[in-house]
Amino acid sequence: MKPFLHRVLMAWRPLYLRGLLLDGLPPLPVTTPSDAARYPRSHRPPATAAGRHAAPAVGTVSALDFPNRRFLMNRSDLTFFHAPNTRSGGTRALLEELGADYRMHVLDFKTGEQRQSDYLAINPMGKVPAIRHGEALVTEQPAVFLYLADLYPEAKLAPSIGDPLRGPYLRWLVFYGSCFEPALIDKAMQRTPAAPSTSPYGDYDTMLKTLTDQLARGPYLLGETFTAADVLWGTALNWTTKFKLVPELPVIRAYVERVLARPAMRRAAEKDAELAAAQAA
Ligand SMILES: N[C@@H](CCC(=O)N[C@@H](CS)C(=O)NCC(=O)O)C(=O)O
Image (cartoon, rainbow, N blue to C red; front, side, top):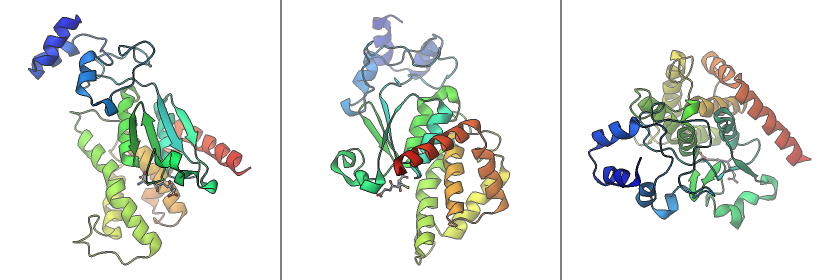
């Protein structure tokens, strides 16, 4: 589209008309000069050697394929901060499922690298996973999963905005961080939990029943559709059942086996085992 016409459409915002025009014109621009103006510097997609109008890294992506996405982000310059045999294994599996192009920065927990200043500049919490995409730092598994799955829409692991599954998808990813993990740690530490009406995550048993009732609808968390949420929950329920923090109920075992049997999940687990062995040597 002519830059002048594009600028007029971006400045003048009858969204329906703009969407109609832009969506009707594949291929979609990846980033545009007006994107650069919209994002604060710290969140702006990185410039590439080919400039801000570089083509998408993968195939031909058009507005017709993803009608709810006005702009696709540049995928270059993605770094994944990882330690083998930790929670960041789930993110590694997601990157494998997405066929993502990324650099991996492996931390050695035995030497306490996660608590040294270089890494604390990435995540002041000293935790993995973390990702850096251009200048954007993302930490916390639900945020990392949401971000990465949206970055690769053609992998179809994130229901798009407008899809009726988008709400449940957000719900179950966020449920992981705000209900499952804190209840799990109460359990692991054998702490007396706060009264359910006081605790933002209720109590362990209610949390677990809420989760298993959803899993029972299966085969995946959102029914027939496999999403990034299943990568997170499949990997998490695998290690938490092994550590006996979650009971190995048939519905949980069957779900974990179903998710981990996927070729990309298997590949990621094998690569992580190799990395753990190399780090231990
Ligand atoms: N809230 C974080 C938790 C991540 C987390 O607990 N990571 C552990 C690995 S299993 C970690 O990095 N621990 C290192 C440490 O605290 O020293 C998330 O969801 O990403």
